[in-house]
Length: 131
Length: 180
Image 1 (cartoon, rainbow over the protein chains, first blue to last red):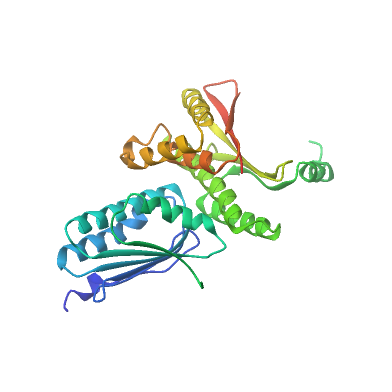
Image 2: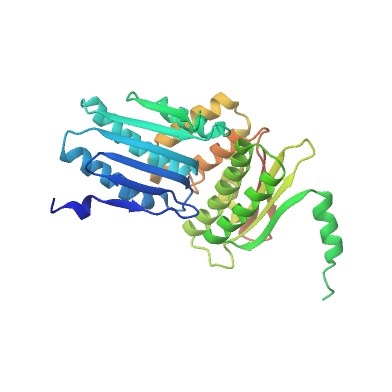
């Protein structure tokens, strides 16, 4: 496991960026919090890079566990790029899955997740927390 | 110069139900801090979490659009200023108004864009949003305001309204109002 440090991804949340943690061995990535940086493209570049490398390096499944809340439009655009990567992998027969958790009191998050799901054919769950 | 009558100013804020008001050069940090305050005020007013998020979202898109525009046009800090007001509307909604100085041609294009968006219903706005989302980044409209303005229009309960005010030179003051 000499290349391990490169495969670790841990970003702490700030007021305007979500926390990100990804585990190479289990193929699970968590993203949680609000996302409204000025340069979303730059923020998500590391996330996209990790997913691309993970998908290219083995045939193992990828599980994206999301607790994203508010997202500005440039974050939405970056997230669409991520889902496009997953969609391509899925079409190639790869096991990929997204679960998007949200506070049941905030239906807007479910609306946001639902609009993304409309354009995806891979398993995409939207789950209320604590229900 | 006469002292500013704070009592009178306060009266105006109260009468117009203004929750938040800002005028001057705006940084990302300031947008975050004012945004935090806005979320707290709205939550304290017993607004539903989804409605808090809608008002907050409109505030973020409009202020980030201004920052983006000033960066693209290379404005000096003193010119990269924003005027932002969030107020409770008479009908129980919330109005977010944001304005900034722009080049006259850009202002006219923005005004036309907003009139286009104001004429669309929710379904048409969703289609426009998804189309814009798929467009390459560098084609993202005149001021990068493409997706953001559609998002604001989608979150609004009434058509967007915008005005241009003459500043007597090459630049004009552009102002947009969204009611959520």
